[in-house]
Each structure stands twice: as C-alpha cells, then as structure tokens.
Amino acid sequence: MSWAFHALAHNPEVENSLHEELDRVLEGRAPRYEDLPNLTYTQLLIKETMRVYPPNPIIGRQAKADDVIGGVHIPAGSFLTISPYLAQQSGELWENPEKFDPMRFVPEKEKDINKFAYYPFGGGPRQCIGQGIAMMTIPLAIATVAQRYRFVAVPGKEVVPDIKLTYQSRHGIHATRHLRPSYN
Image 1 (cartoon, rainbow, N blue to C red):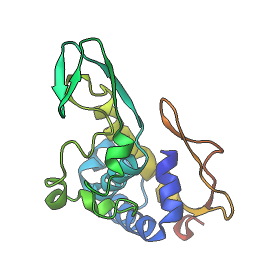
Image 2: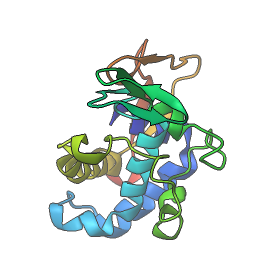
Image 3: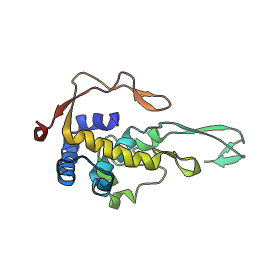
Image 4: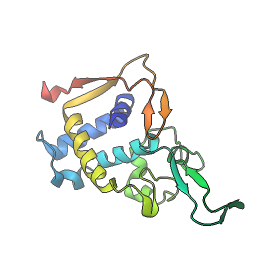
C-alpha cells in the first residue's frame, strides 16, 4: 500500500480521479465490502501500482523434468527465475511502461494484456494464495485512508528501489499527508 500512496503523491491527476470516485461512492462514510464493485478506479489504481511496483519482483521455480525453453535445454532440477518486475516494465509488452496509468486496466484494454506481461501474484498452480484477500482488503484500506487525505511528494527525497524478496525502497517512501478540505 505504501507504493500506492507514493504513486498518488507523484501523480496528482490520478489522486484527483481516486478522490472523485471515493466522494461519489462513499458519500463521506467508511468503505465497506459491499462497496468493492463500485470502487472500480480504486481497483485500477491497485493493479497499476502492482504493475509498476510488483510485490514479488522475482519468482523462483525448480524444473521437475528436462525441458527446452526458447531453444535452451533446461535439465531437471535446474533453478529458474522469472521477473514480474522486468515483464511489467517492458516496452515490448506495454505502451509507455514508465507512465503510471491506471486506465490501462479498464476492461476493454485489460482483455488485450498479454497473460505473461502482468502477474504480480505469480501464475499457475503456485500463484499466491493471498491474491483474493489482498484484492479485497487493499482497496478498502486505500479507500479508508485516501478518502480523508491527499499525499504530496517530499522534494529531494528520491526513491531508490531495493529488490529483495519483495520490492522495497532502500531509504523508505517519503510523502506528507494533508487532510482533504472536506475533512477539515
């Protein structure tokens, strides 16, 4: 969620669209599970956040049997890695991958996304079992916070990616939060 607030701090037009949706759907009350179908932009924001800042930037697997991938022989027992981070930043797979654009995930565009271009939770039988609960709780948590606050980037505080087991920032994520006028 930190990355979503970072993205909002650096993309005020995205934050404005999010606030418009939250004001319209929630009308000042706390978000509930029943609101999820109507928090469509919030869900687009989360998908784009996970494209740019995937929770698992590198996924490892071990080959069960000999195989050939792209003309390369892979012996059984070999360790392989795939990178959602690299795939999700690829200019070959995404138009303007450096641009933070939640609208790339609207249904009419999302259906055209290559299934190997976006996999923040992994894929196949070994994909993250927490995907369902994450995509239920994260929108509600973001809506709860963003409904009350707007985020502003702190000048001079650069985010330095630190790719480990999870995608992190080496020196933290810096933004200030300001109470929205409707909550003053």
